[in-house]
Image 1 (spheres, helix red, strand yellow):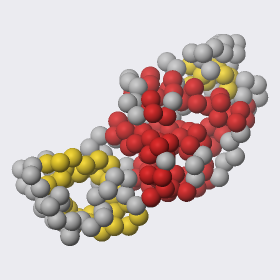
Image 2 (tube, helix red, strand yellow):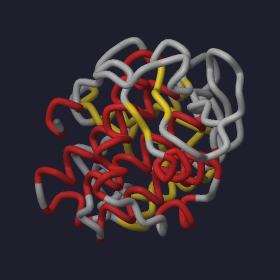
Image 3 (cartoon, helix red, strand yellow):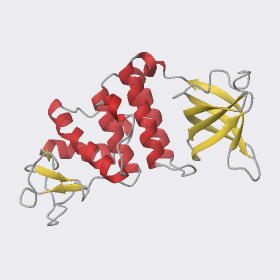
Length: 247
């Protein structure tokens, strides 16, 4: 099989045999893959500084016939995002982003926009320490890309279009908002104001750069966080292990 070269983000590594590393990486053109870096623990010549977690690299690899794992020939370092490792909150959020990506995108599923989101999020996290905002942006966009977009256009019960006026209640089982005639605000049905609904629409439907430029007020952050928590846990059927370090 032909050798491929892809931009990739290193997601996880494990010791494999005496001198090898097993590497999980997310590529721009082939999605999430796993491969073996032969001798990477003994000699870093072919993989100098490019198998560190969260790093953006350019990998050369191929799939050996009859095997499920790729063989990594070499790697070229592009960006290490050192700011991610500068404090516990940034490191925890990056780990959380990796875990959510792994759940939403199985091995081999091509997802160029998800690669761009992960790369853009790491770049922002490398420089910006607004943890709550970056988490909201990533969660909202990742869930939308994974097929779990929140329905913000109409009441999920009566079907009445949401005109951007008045408050709405999020319904976890429906994955959308309901008018206050069909649902009441509560801990399990958090309320959203008109400006918050509009902000979520923008995040779900626009490129990363435009979403990142959005001015999220403290009130919006306060309203969005419980909605995303309920939405993610219900849709993926579990609580992410890394979430406890953020909460």
